[in-house]
Length: 427
Ligand code: UD1
Picture (cartoon, rainbow, N blue to C red):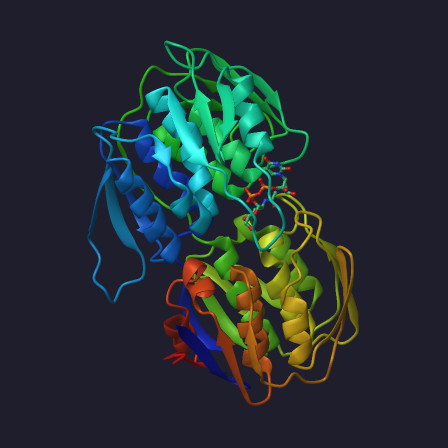
């Protein structure tokens, strides 16, 4: 197993290319199931989760070819062709490893009239139920059965009629599944209190490019006029606002000055606002975003919230940055009940963070010190890397597979910024 070794204390400077968004890619890939024609996705990040999703789609009989980019390039182009679907079952071994597999439920139901997907099971950042995915599909006319750890969704003969569903809480995944199920329904479907994340807009844009008809894109009320069939498309995955925000926190904590090439400021407003409040310069720059700091950081009080609020996926990285702020910050996690696994590890590096339920008080400290650490999820792992970059001495972050799920070739990107980050085998 690989680990990362960071020699702390280097000021980041230079330009880093921002990859295609993992969270968008994972909802664009299953759209291949909605058409017999080829779907080509450009700017797909090279990540373990994307490979996993490709493998899952291959199991259904979807052919995938990768072309158009050299190994040295970031990102790649994938063409997916679901001419004939040979299975509509997503097995436990695959779903267990990758929660996003649940996103085949909606499109598979739309295309095949039925879909069977293993229930995802426990997850490191909270119990993460899927009841809203199922309720939305039921509202559109699907029959849902649960048996032996699997959920089976069946559409009436002739396809889903469509319907109306109001989300009691905002759910990104359930909004995505519902959209993909409704796009070829027989009638009109309405989603109230739908998620508005930029990744949802990316999904709506792809579905529209494939011939779908969706009104209200970017708002919390989506009206989907079912169309009889979708066609193929070529589409570029949006840039990763969470990856961009992560590198921004890394620059800020090291007193660096970097350019996030390809990042879109309008898609990361809440992060930008938080960084500016902390005293970091963030501005549009040459097809991207410049982030600069003298290393003097002010404390913040903020809570995670659905978009346009501050993303739960940025909480751990911002917390790492605030460990070096001048005063106490108060962060509240409102999306997941168990998303502070990075706290004890950051404290082992000299941070002073106290948690009380969903709230964390981050007392800024004058210095962090390198240590051997590990985390149990993707963003928590990145927070340890960020702390390591600012720490005195060497930090080793174990369980690198978490980072490989969501950060494309992170050690190469940090090298572009002048950091000393090395990948080595753990053995
Ligand atoms: C969530 C985040 C998303 C992030 C992703 C990975 C939000 C709104 N969503 O998306 O930004 O990229 O995690 O970290 O910030 N819920 C239910 N029943 C369901 C589905 C969800 O009760 O069927 C609850 C969840 O427990 C959670 C909330 O709704 O408290 C939001 O979950 P949801 O948006 O669905 O999670 P993801 O799609 O994984």
